[in-house]
Length: 138
Length: 138
DNA sequence: CTCTTTTTGATAATGACTATCATTATTATG
DNA sequence: CATAATAATGATAGTCATTATCAAAAAGAG
Ligand SMILES: [Mn+2]
Ligand SMILES: [Mn+2]
Ligand SMILES: [Zn+2]
Ligand SMILES: [Zn+2]
Image (cartoon, rainbow over all chains, first blue to last red; front, top):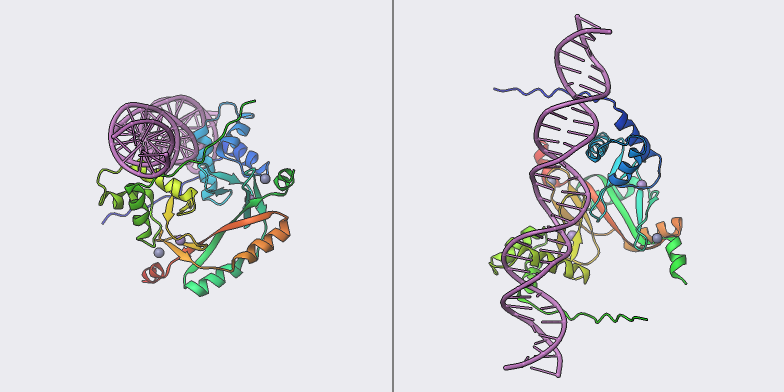
């Protein structure tokens, strides 16, 4: 019998990790890895894009940041980690935060109807944001 | 002044398009392009994967099928085009259809709160399906 | 049938992300 | 501090789903 003991890996604090997290937290938008990379480079010009991806993945795995994947080809990240929803403008593509509706309600409603054990949901609204609405009215 | 008149492109009916649509509609699951490709090949052994992707894109653009992108690396397609939501099992990965909740309600609720013109939303639940729930209980 | 336009199949290209690996940085320990 | 153990980094090659390209074939109009 072979027993594999997986030692819990010690995380090491690095300048890169710190700056990546700071850059991401400096905005309330939902930037891509490349945007974060550009921000980090202003402080650490020799940072590698792979390092940005690596750290974002690690941070997301530990729940310190959120990775968001809407339909597009690239991942978006955000520093805000409390539960909230999003609205994406079909015209300008901007991603907005949307609070609530009350969380448990939907889960319970669906759980009852389907018999599934529901842990969470992802809710994204689409439409036209106010700014675009005004611009398109011309 | 240069005027560019874009003629509306005529769509041509092909055997490939027909089979792709039929294969997709033959299941109530949410297959990938590759799964559909395999199905189509049983009838048209020389079909190209590119043709499958091309037609799925065209069909999705015209609303005849739906393209679904959850977090993963590949797109899923489905023939059911009426509004409904999905549940994805964290354990087995299976995608289930989930009907309702009442559609307009959420839109209105959020539209009122945010001032956005909301056209639709995408709602995905996550958790453990009944089959996995039973299996995990052992 | 003939002309025009779209589609096809084969294959190369794209692009976001991940793996690899030698080197460097961080932490633990003496 | 010195040393060893281990994790992280930067550079770059690889992956893989999807898209672009293009000559040849098929579909539809007349
Ligand atoms: Mn957000
Ligand atoms: Mn469905
Ligand atoms: Zn907008
Ligand atoms: Zn399951």
